[in-house]
Image (cartoon, rainbow, N blue to C red; front, side):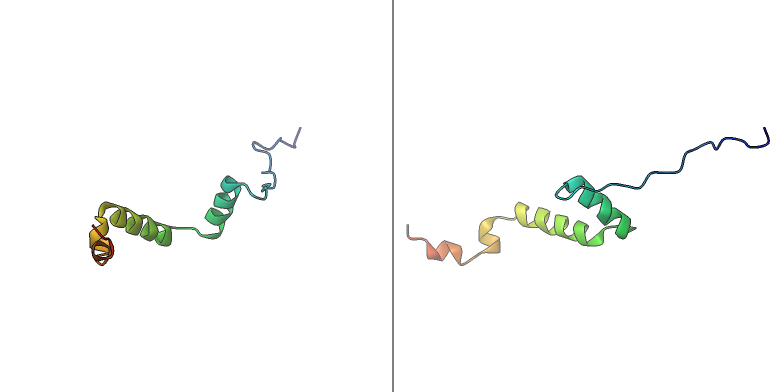
Amino acid sequence: MSEEAPLLLPAAAKVYHDGCPGCAQERKMEINKGVPYRELFFVGITTLASSLPITFLFPFLYFMMDG
Protein backbone atom coordinates (compact mmCIF):
# COMPACT_ATOMS: atom_id res chain seq x y z
CA MET A 1 0.00 0.00 0.00
CA SER A 2 2.99 2.28 -0.12
CA GLU A 3 2.43 2.81 -3.85
CA GLU A 4 -0.38 5.24 -4.69
CA ALA A 5 -2.23 5.48 -7.97
CA PRO A 6 -1.49 8.59 -10.07
CA LEU A 7 -4.21 11.23 -10.12
CA LEU A 8 -4.06 11.72 -13.89
CA LEU A 9 -3.05 9.33 -16.61
CA PRO A 10 -0.30 10.49 -18.98
CA ALA A 11 -1.64 12.29 -22.04
CA ALA A 12 -1.90 10.20 -25.17
CA ALA A 13 -0.02 11.32 -28.26
CA LYS A 14 -2.04 13.62 -30.47
CA VAL A 15 -3.23 12.18 -33.76
CA TYR A 16 -3.50 14.51 -36.73
CA HIS A 17 -5.34 13.66 -39.94
CA ASP A 18 -4.28 14.89 -43.37
CA GLY A 19 -6.69 17.35 -44.95
CA CYS A 20 -8.45 18.16 -41.67
CA PRO A 21 -8.69 21.97 -41.20
CA GLY A 22 -9.03 21.62 -37.42
CA CYS A 23 -5.89 19.48 -37.21
CA ALA A 24 -3.99 21.97 -39.36
CA GLN A 25 -5.04 24.80 -37.03
CA GLU A 26 -3.98 22.82 -33.96
CA ARG A 27 -0.55 22.19 -35.49
CA LYS A 28 -0.21 25.87 -36.35
CA MET A 29 -1.14 26.86 -32.79
CA GLU A 30 1.46 24.48 -31.33
CA ILE A 31 4.22 25.88 -33.54
CA ASN A 32 3.35 29.58 -33.14
CA LYS A 33 2.69 30.48 -29.53
CA GLY A 34 1.48 34.02 -28.99
CA VAL A 35 -0.61 36.58 -30.85
CA PRO A 36 -1.11 35.83 -34.59
CA TYR A 37 -0.26 39.32 -35.88
CA ARG A 38 -0.01 38.22 -39.51
CA GLU A 39 -3.54 36.75 -39.56
CA LEU A 40 -4.92 39.80 -37.74
CA PHE A 41 -3.28 42.05 -40.34
CA PHE A 42 -4.95 40.14 -43.20
CA VAL A 43 -8.34 40.30 -41.49
CA GLY A 44 -7.94 44.05 -40.93
CA ILE A 45 -6.95 44.75 -44.53
CA THR A 46 -9.82 42.63 -45.85
CA THR A 47 -12.32 44.42 -43.59
CA LEU A 48 -11.01 47.82 -44.66
CA ALA A 49 -11.08 46.92 -48.36
CA SER A 50 -14.59 45.48 -48.21
CA SER A 51 -16.00 48.65 -46.65
CA LEU A 52 -14.53 51.00 -49.29
CA PRO A 53 -16.43 51.72 -52.50
CA ILE A 54 -15.03 50.11 -55.64
CA THR A 55 -14.35 53.49 -57.28
CA PHE A 56 -12.01 54.40 -54.42
CA LEU A 57 -9.94 51.26 -54.94
CA PHE A 58 -10.03 51.35 -58.75
CA PRO A 59 -10.64 54.94 -59.91
CA PHE A 60 -9.88 54.07 -63.56
CA LEU A 61 -12.75 51.54 -63.66
CA TYR A 62 -15.34 54.32 -64.18
CA PHE A 63 -13.61 55.51 -67.35
CA MET A 64 -13.27 51.99 -68.80
CA MET A 65 -17.04 51.47 -69.06
CA ASP A 66 -19.10 52.78 -71.92
CA GLY A 67 -22.40 54.20 -70.87
